[in-house]
Image (cartoon, one colour):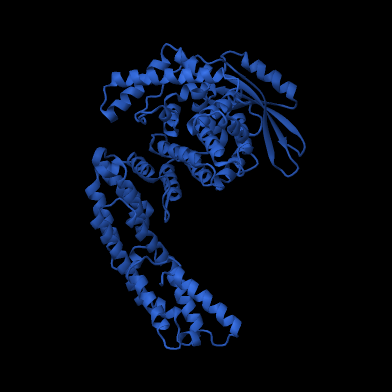
Length: 565
């Protein structure tokens, strides 16, 4: 497409996904084609026309100019048989992110067909009433949640079911009251203004958030495509938004990203599940690689993630990564060996010197994914899989972080004794280079070992083991300093005292060593200089009076930051 020209893409919605069918040169031709496809047999669930505009800089912008969807019949849609669900005790719990994520999984088929987020379902009276009036979907959903929750709480499932019915009835009454309120403001392009106006009559923060989301949901529910909803939400978001307003938008965007078909629209075509998972992790950190073929919303989202404005969205994406990783769906279908290579790529993105992205659930999902490639099943297969994942990591300090995270998951606790022994044996090596990569620079070796030391001290390992492991790492660092002459290289006798002292104190303040023996060695060298009878005189040698005072003030300030008191 040449710059300044538009084409119109006609897409159909089937089984929760949009697929391209035709292209036309004019919008009127595109609309006519879409309507023809909508009335064809067998029927599609929806049609839309997307205007693709090529800009002079080569970027292509996409705008949905026409959408037509069939009314969904909830009684023809089945729930997804979830196995986990958060337990709600207070009214506010039903509106929490954990609850909305449960609703998103349970009612995924219905939400995809209705093009609706869990937030819209909970805050729009007509949407909530419609699902309550179904003969099969609503009772099935309540029964499933009651059954899952009763396993967790030990409550009678029938009592839990009745409690859920009462809670939804109360939500419906509240939604009806909100629909009839004349004092609710309209949403233009300033969501913060809506929150501010609602605050004037809301009883508390929870009340303010509820009515603000009612206004937002009533606006969103009229948009019947995911990218249109996302475009609206991202346009309302931004760095200048008050935290309360941004937090609400973050939650709604997280709901949208939790819907598989919506997430697929956002990510665009991915050549494999592995590629999609890596793109999701990159996006969650604001590092997604975008191209002109991607939706404009992806680039906007990437910027919001990079600015740290979407913590709920990050949690939703990583939850999706974990669930897909633990599923039976192949990571890559390219051919023999592709699954193994794909797992290595995903693991390399998720597990590194900073730890496990996504925490214990992702660690367990990686083990389960590896176990699927084994002939052995059950406990034996899982045990072999743990070793297999460690062989893929092949960095002892990172292996320890992975194992510690795995222990926080049920799968890790099931193999607790074996995992604890692996952690002990991996840390208790004789040389630092056996714990961190030998190819690293001396500084990076110390940084990696210190990071592991701090990670272990903050972990949930048994206290005696935690302290023992940390002490051993400290011993390795102390021996490394002495063997490599790290301090001597900083404190060369032929260098000026001022340079030697500053370099030593900067080393102590840099955080490359943990509190302990190794850091004590460096500090002792500094103290030996400070105790010299003419230290200050030697320190300022060669400086004029003004520079002498300034240099001493800066040095003593550095001493304070380095822990010298």
